[in-house]
Length: 200
Image (cartoon, rainbow, N blue to C red):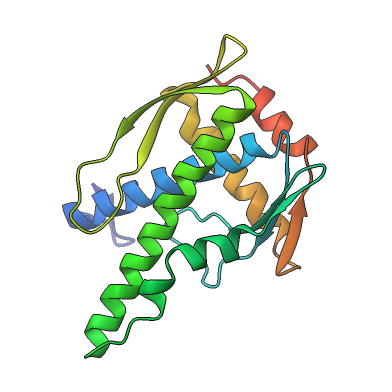
């Protein structure tokens, strides 16, 4: 219950349940992807790009442009666009159809990126306990992280994954304020500090 300045109480307007759930889902997925990018940056440098639109109500994660190892570079953004080229090049009978297809494209790109990063982290040596999202007719299923282990030690749990992910999101946002693109170097000190601090 909130109070007006004249002392008359009023009930705050709450968000529709569907809207609230959608925002919570987007927040969870954004911070999870931030966690995955952070884990990948332990071994790889990552070129990221500022999101085209800034959101004031949900967490955001910059776009991954490329992932760089010691002797190789994966042009990730181009790789993903080529993979979903059919959706991008489709012709539309109406504006509504174009918008629907674009949303589907963005969703599939996000889910593919999430699952690709999970696989890459697994190759590095991280072990994940995950659950799959519900089956969808039009999009791939996304894996939601329950916990993360590294070298036999639990380093992230459901209790601290959201908090640490938000901090990584905030850090990524801060380094693309003045530059459209910037590189997160392998072994980034700030990310390492976030993962090292205990919140249990």
